[in-house]
Length: 438
Image (cartoon, rainbow, N blue to C red; front, side, top):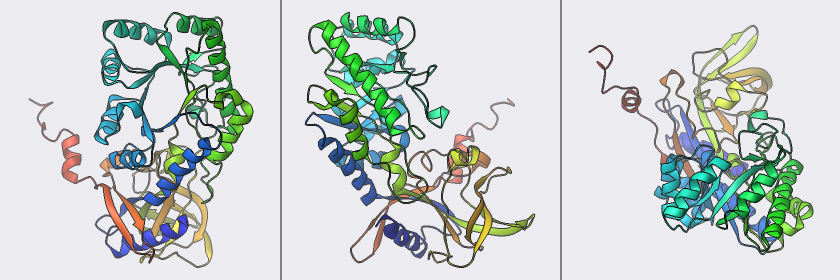
């Protein structure tokens, strides 16, 4: 069904002039798919626990106000990690009670704002707890407060996204000498510290390692509550990190698989004594975003065909710089937006930037592409087109949500319009041309 909606949206984007010679790259979001993922998440945890669960979308995965509003309408909250992300959440109308602040470098001003608003805060380290001591003493707050710990259970296949390694920059490293005892004492000294947070990693981290990290945090919460003689910790924030399948349209692994694994790994976590917070991002949005780009030219170099398109490093930065970790599929369409057929040919799909590595795909078997064709890059709804990389001052593409009616009619709504050249100049100091020569 998702692929059917995508095919219709590609054709409609050409028919309706959304993708054109004047605007040769656009991004699409399937709103029905996003709602389906949100429903799958909430139902997966509802199937294994009666506890209250706040599913807080990790804003960094898609920092777009209409996306946050859509997810809020679907019953989700937000996890923010900067003043900018908090501003986006507030602009989307997300209430403080559905907002969680995580960051390894919160300033005193950020903490004061969060506490004044009543937003939940997870401190990253013991020094931050010292700051919170002073702030809590100076003014009452409704903010639930917790501490992030690093269970140090190991890395996945992508080191940069593995947050529970021995030397991770996040949280208090539990296996360092004296650290666990220090964390326990920190809670005993602070009756207002009622949450515990952990996050093992993201893409490339297997479900078993994610569950192991959560299990370690649960065991620590049990230890703290036992030593406190009461249930001081009433909420466990277990982070997110469900990996995404970039190889096909199949959505795997599933939230249901992960929830069942948690039930097997730490059944006490789900018996109703603890409230839960999750912080999924990529897995909610990735499969529902598609970048579309026109092929401008085709050529042959060293006997290999090359299609030069308008989508490259500016939208697919991770794929261009780390293609082995972030491979993306290429779906070929003709100039009218119909799936391209024909004999399969090994070819490269290049982007528009002026460096040799700007390649979306290398040596990929596809029907031979032609000038004017459309390449669709699926699975890009998270960490791709909303994270523009301004190489060569290439403009940010327009982002459009779409819905498909029962009769196949496609309706688009603009999430973010394309960046103009005047805006590029303004961001580059265009109002101050003499700043360095006066």
